[in-house]
Length: 182
Image 1 (tube, one colour):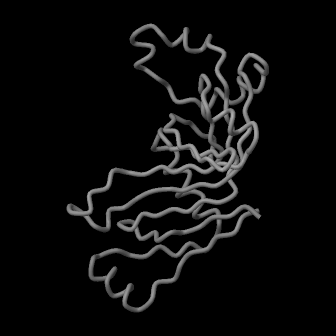
Image 2 (cartoon, one colour):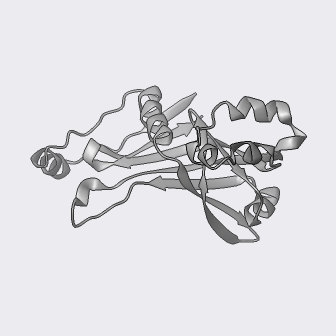
């Protein structure tokens, strides 16, 4: 079960957005906002994952894929795993390029807060096979003959289950709409 919080525009904001030809979205169910978030996740492939240990945050850009709201990352290792071992709470963000001079209202992005777990691929091939069916095709690896080599590597698989999302797409009428798992 989830709930949503959609900020209400004041009269001055309503006039401004109307003048700009922007219709503010009024989500009435969590499922409506979920579909917008899933579409955004489906049409992007890089996020910035924030982990923290001993009061020292770390942000890492990573390629991901998803099954609806659940995000998967495959990685060879690094400091993020030392952090995850001690603290499973994570956040990530995804954004579109933004040029405020060209389009001040063109800002578009997603923030997520959640919990992460991970495993080594070869330690749980059954779970890996279930997750791998959501991987996006990578024709560039196949083109240079590395697709089979990449699949043979024993990388770590991170699974991020969201607890909260915040989505902004002003040009599409979405002003920091929030989705929370209950």
